[in-house]
Image (tube, rainbow, N blue to C red; front, side):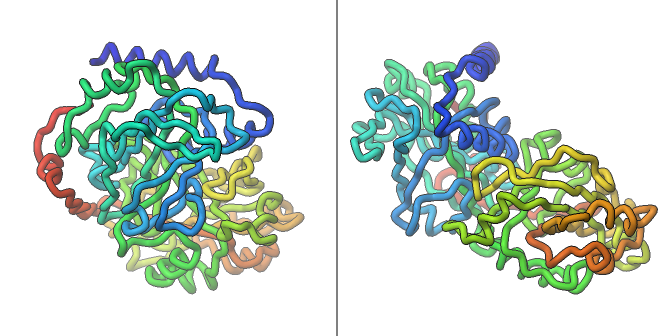
Length: 435
């Protein structure tokens, strides 16, 4: 088994250098996609490499095609998706394809004891003249609908060219449901069935219906509910969504941080990736302008040194100017920069005796002349920073987006309490890895 996984990793490494690059018409989408899948941790949490195009997906429960990274309710996700080939994709319309959907956050975002739940293995997909994929045979692993009760999971679908004898080989490997759903090693499966690198993919977010929704209005409300207005923010009415992701350095994969998520100090030790989702799927002019905007990010601790004694608040953990949207995507668009930070990222580390702290990340559009004004007004150290006063002094308008998490020695992680009929018992047994 280890040999086969190593073989698959070697193949995917080769694919990264030899995989045919797409035409110029889709190059930007491919480059942006590779950044997004790495930033959200699907690479390497699911597969070690992805260099494919967006997989257009529709649901009968949605009025428009799924946007990559779109948040769905459990009810919206409880439907069979339809996949489509775009006219500008370099997909061979004479061969069959395989779609595989996985949940890398199973059974819960902070309890990934059985990650890579298998939600769908659908072979023999052919492209009609309309671009729609239709399958000629039943699914090898029938559609399982998301039902998480905790923070949103990253439900990810990859599309592969189908090799000869795939159905026969895969049928002999796949463990039947229900216990075959958990710990699905897709890299090993690829090696054993002859699947190459995925040619397209997409993902959506789905969490418990009582969880924070991936919208600016929901983020604004949770800021209000958690006492982050009026301090450190005098006002917070964002028109975009800021996501931060921490790499797969510890635990069982990367973390896409939702507002209020509890994190360990080890999980937030590295500098996170920053991603911006524009509010309008139709891209209003204001949202479209963000492609050309420059941003500055502040990361603050309003609970220093303790939530009961905030004499050192706000403590500055990061100030990064000159951030720009990378690529053409309006959902989960990476924010990148090539200039030094005004304050480098400092890993959160509340006193061991303190209750958990809130760590707030807030994004502003950066005005002309900001750096000179910032240098003249930035404090000498990181303590007792007044964001409102600083914003007034340097000409910052209202924040565009923001998020926050909690960490500290006393942080706790509620059980996700995931209930999957006929499967739940396997999440609490010493089940072996399944193909």
